[in-house]
Image (tube, rainbow, N blue to C red; front, side):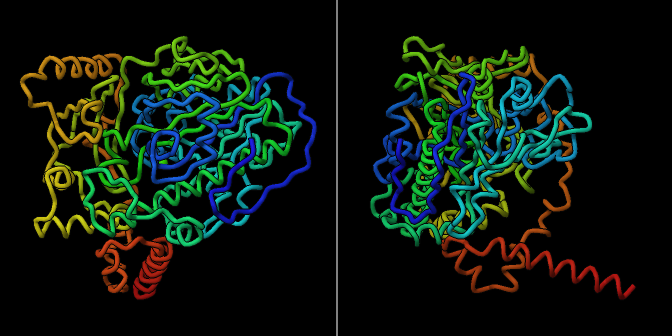
Length: 524
Ligand SMILES: [Ca+2]
């Protein structure tokens, strides 16, 4: 499978072909894109070119109703690594518990089982990403982002040793069978977005972008969305390079490739929330023996670790909450997926939150445990990385937003929400107050309550007692700093420009704070 580079100048990754020393078990390649929903050509988008993933889907199994377990990175990644929902293991608050080992020593990272079975576990990819556009692709390719104590590489016992992988980067034929995990990071918001768009040979035309109806149809919003799709194209090109690398090493024939995004699209009313664009993720499995199929079953990220262990011939632990995908079967022979899934969203940076959701094959039920926290809580990260937020706030003040676009600016959230996501894929019409939907509402409530009766939910338990780490507090974020010292730049942000200096500002502001502290200390 040769890669099609999506019109972007990326480094090549030529390697001498070497002998595959696999003992017959498949190699497993787990590739995670960041923060995107079904924004690929193979899922029907007409405004983006993703030839490499389109080909993967045309030859492999493409899941059309796959869900993350949280609409944020670190809880989803923590869940996949343990096989258990993040609300059970205490890994629910984004970027938390970094010094806390997993609470139950019978719960082990799935890589520990793979390593016991003789798999070489390899994290990240260096060869393909040597000439990134503006950020360090190869460092971000090893992103783990787990809310428990871990180290990238080294032994693991969960008490004194917390290493999850055997090594970084290099896949060698003698590593077979291997498990390789690679994050393709650039679809995450960052200071490289404009540079990647500038480098594209076919930047996405803002006029051709199909916007979701909850975003205002404004030139700046179109430009931003086009730039997001440029990131998707760049990611697709990187994916193609990883596949080329495997082929050139002679390892592709015995490798199963699993591609997903960790959570939904980084946009207003998507990432962070239970709606379709926040929770529906691409999921494609490809490789030797995998039959092409398009599967509409409701499946979960938690099915991924179970699938990986099954592919490796490892017994799936009793406590696992996912079930392995039947990737070698036609759709009518598949296991049918899940009847329903439980999702949770808790603290995100400095914003406390507690949202719970249930998805069935038709409905989404949402229970807001903190309804007083608005959808737009002036979250610092979103201030910098959601140009649409500023554009739409201005339009709101001018009375220019329609009902769908005003949803994000409600002063509070309803206690309960219910959506028929088949009829209403943008989750614009809350049916929770509709008397005709009372039976459905009660069924969804009962599903959520049955989960809560069976499992602890540590996010609901700790929601009123959370304390933010020092570096999450508002004063350590650069909004007031930029407003004061870079007022012209702040004006651009408020006008809906895409940010590309956030990291610089963060560093400068930290330096200034440190200098102020030192000066205060000297005066004492
Ligand atoms: Ca993510």
